[in-house]
Image (tube, rainbow, N blue to C red; front, top):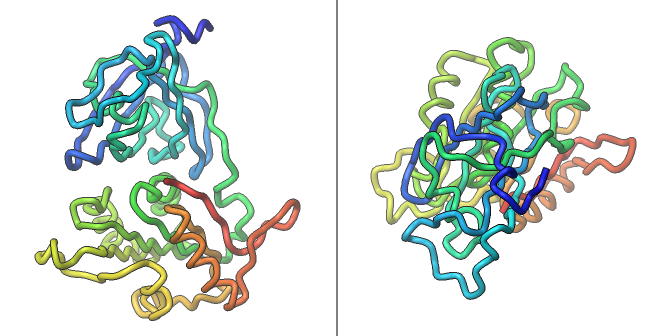
Length: 272
């Protein structure tokens, strides 16, 4: 494939849902068969440098050449059993190269979708007897949505907990879906939280940073699960500062990050 020509485009926008002006869900359908993937993996999206950008984007100091294919990796949020399209949730980075162009896409528009999914941020090495506590900030929630959409309704033996933090309630992507899933599935607990409660007074729920909520025992209180590596493995996906803070807190409790053949009980994915 010549990635410097329009023939680089091999997929199109099947669906577009704007959660707020800076948060977007895209459903991308390939021209051919969608690749197989495991919940938690990521894929690559791309657009040419000459593609339009949204008006809210910051001016580019050095615009990319028009025929350059700009590519970035994004976690897949759709279920792995969904064979028509791959879904992605994306935050607008006004100074970025790609997201201002992705936000300008409309249904039917063309783009590049990588030929395969990658990544080891999956449940493959978690024993089926163990619960999983899935902690995220912002769009770091995406891999967990894929896991839950694929497994929550049919894997009723495993306990799932999602602790999701955002600045405001309107940044809590998939909130309505996860609240509905929690009502349907007694083995799933959803804990949304925000950090800027003074600017979002209508929000009812937990406020404060993720690491503070974990230290205060919010997961134990809401789910009944202990932060104990013998009982539950923890996944962290989000900004590096959150990952570092929570990793330190959990290592004191006996959690270990895997390496090589040792899977560990703490799984990390930086998503910024």
